[in-house]
Length: 67
Image 1 (cartoon, rainbow, N blue to C red):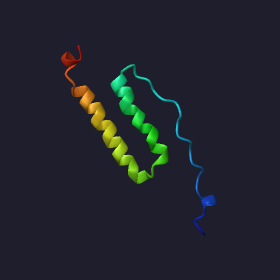
Image 2 (cartoon, rainbow, N blue to C red):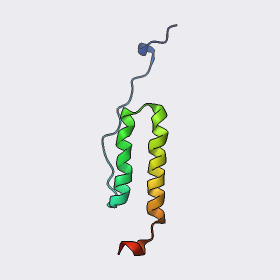
Image 3 (tube, rainbow, N blue to C red):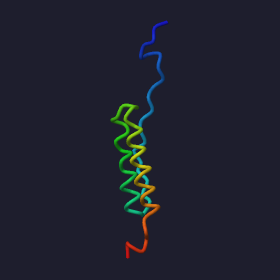
Image 4 (cartoon, one colour):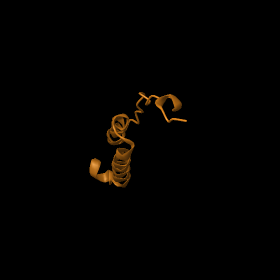
């Protein structure tokens, strides 16, 4: 049996709905996920690592500095 594209399941489309959190910093971090569909799987790690870092920085931010 040959492994042809006919043997593979159809690819699912990437969701186009973007979540809005009402927190600009979190929304900015999540916007990086829009790159995923155009990247090879090997590039996903960098996007998810950057997302994690951005969200962690936002969680650790000193709220008193924002006011």
